[in-house]
Image 1: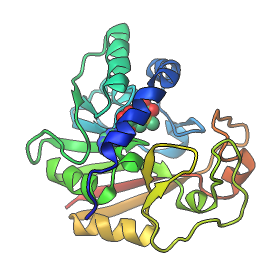
Image 2: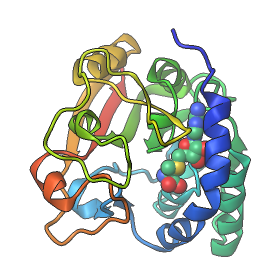
Image 3: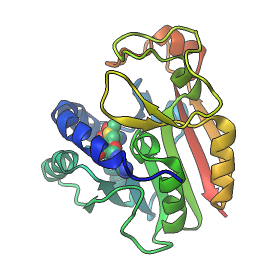
Length: 251
Ligand SMILES: C[S@@+](CC[C@H](N)C(=O)[O-])C[C@H]1O[C@@H](n2cnc3c(N)ncnc32)[C@H](O)[C@@H]1O
């Protein structure tokens, strides 16, 4: 089991990055659900179940827009994030849009809620990549009610094998990293620490925590999609999955 040694480093990194995410956060609060770096509309990808009446928890809510989408669809969301600067943006947007739901300062590795408190736990590039899955996933299982859903979006595993060290350079169709042993990933030019797993490891971890895997959505952006991120081209992402959404249910 890994330790928490990365958490503070990631909080520092997200504190620095927070101002750069505020405007995109506002656009997303104002818009309809659209996922990942290609903003693929919900209708094209089918990430969300019917959430009306559900208690939902977003792990690593950042600017909080995923929870705002859930709120508008009738859920009772809670957004959780360990970085005050990100929560501060989320709190301003919550005031601006008048959608009042709780925003809690905490990390995915130690969720401050009782067992079986939620019907849905969701994470879009939140705890799903910035927290060790061997720590946050058991916590997600703990706070979910039996029959509850876990949905999380991550970078595609193939992309993580091909990605260049420099995030401003687009990945080629060349494997640069080992698949076996994929777990903690540190980029030379970035002070944040990420976590990525191979498919077998994800499945074994989900099953070990009492989940049944329901789907793995490999997001394929439409031919006219655009992204502000440079680490993957549209051509690459049209040929291989650059983003993946795991859907699992607690038995
Ligand atoms: C890409 S951002 C947020 C994603 C969100 N969908 C958004 O764009 O507003 C990633 C977030 O993960 C949070 N984070 C970092 N470490 C975390 C951890 N251990 N548990 C939960 N969230 C974490 C960061 O503070 C940051 O706000």
